[in-house]
Length: 104
Image 1 (cartoon, rainbow, N blue to C red):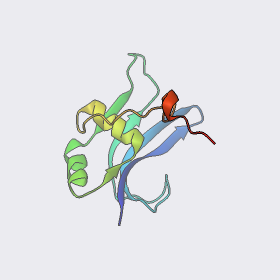
Image 2: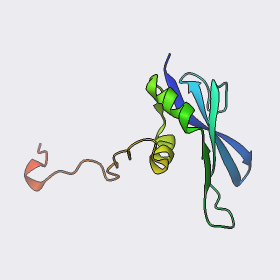
Image 3: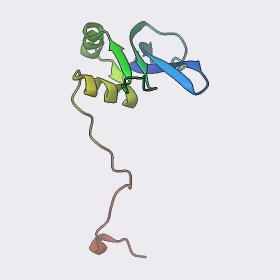
């Protein structure tokens, strides 16, 4: 059973908020879950901050038993100091030097 830590979207149109939850990788995005471990509100409040609440103890437990965080959750956990920062992806793809350009 592949267990994932991921986001489930709730809220209204143009006003989303997310629950961070533990689920089997086969389950749908907003489907059945094993445990809710946090909340994330991406819309900045009046103080200018995006609010995140995490149950760090339970997240560390699930990571210790092999749960894999999704990319957005890994980014949130890195900002909270639970995980090391994920490596940045190169948006442009692989680059080739002029001497390595494939020829026909």
